[in-house]
View 1 (cartoon, rainbow, N blue to C red):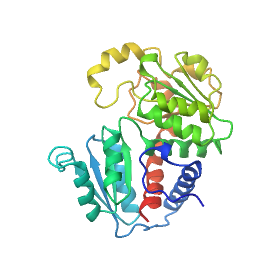
View 2: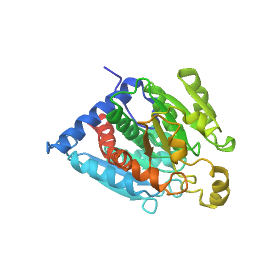
View 3: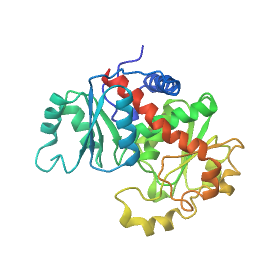
View 4: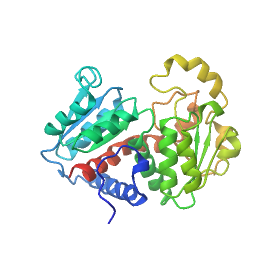
Length: 304
């Protein structure tokens, strides 16, 4: 048996067994949902959802997930909460711990998520920070395994900004045994400590040569060039990332049966062409659906 999880703050905190346990449960919950088998495992439980950064997918998937599990989800916007303004986070954490059975938070600073876990007494789920996006990567891994059958021998290539997505994908990919390559401009590399960890713990490379890094990839992954909060850098980023596009020329160097993943929203004709996105729409939107199933598995593991 793997260690029981207390929180989901970042994938680096989880063992390979814990990650596989989440994916196996996600597969089961998806199967049950598709076959009309109800699973009110979290009846009577309430998840608080704190959004300092707005998001359609994260809010809808967590809210629907809790409903399908028989529980309740409570939406708390930054207007409703005084985190860091009126009330120190350690107090917010302790107060909310008295009312709620778990908290999902989507915010900017990773430290805020870590502090909630440190001072509260209930499970904390990272719905996204500037550093990590573990829920998205669990959905990505679920989708890859559904399509490819297993992770053994697979190569994942991420193209674009070395952002929170890249950080979490590197960790998740290495932990399940894939080899991971990241193609990005030198000024936009992923977290240095994560890259050093990846090199020590698996097959990892990072550089600017997009075609060399994508060669023979089984999975091509991309994300927007400018994330939320970086709108002021859009023009500068467009120039920096102009050659980092997932298009026919790039797909030609990947494996013939390579799948494409994108965490969405996508900016067509920027990081990915309309043509490639539409050709791989099935697996990209399956990946979006799998956010629901993967997050339900996390909720069950933490709140049951």
